[in-house]
Image 1 (cartoon, helix red, strand yellow):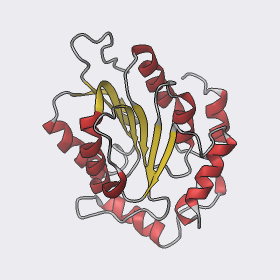
Image 2 (cartoon, helix red, strand yellow; image 1 turned 90 degrees about the horizontal axis):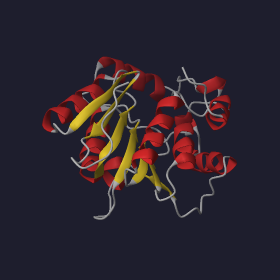
Image 3 (tube, rainbow, N blue to C red; image 1 turned 180 degrees about the vertical axis):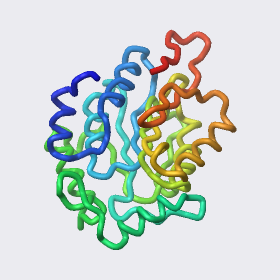
Length: 231
């Protein structure tokens, strides 16, 4: 296992992410090497260490867009598994622990401002024209300009409805060769069901990582220099 970069180490030390940063870093490096056009987006920002990493390391022509309700997450639906409903009950009862002994992020009275403070602490000023945070439910905020493309999307949104909404909205703008990272595929049944249903309808999405989290790549154009790499 490769060592974390100093940036990723600092993010981990401040308890800002649950994620393994190596894979996000590798996806960004591959995008830069292969010159995949488009912005970097994250749905489900939370505190968010991964957003800081993505925004700090993204290609110079890209913009970062983070989408989150920045508060208490919505409940799961009948399409979600018992584990998801049990998890939500713990959260709703105020009994969910946070990272490193801190308060669970969903209980923060002003999570949006806390995220801005974290971004600024890592050199990402809120007025940066390449940094955008969108507050609200995905069905209300997750829209793209006709000319906007996406190189990488990190989906960390737990439940069936949220994942299905994100995949449906993001896919048309995803560049050939672009990546979708499904953080909760192996954790929650609703995420897995929504993803499997979407994959069954889109044969141009290929699985390039199927451990720890699921990473999909949209088939590159025939003339593209890069090909999917299996890890």
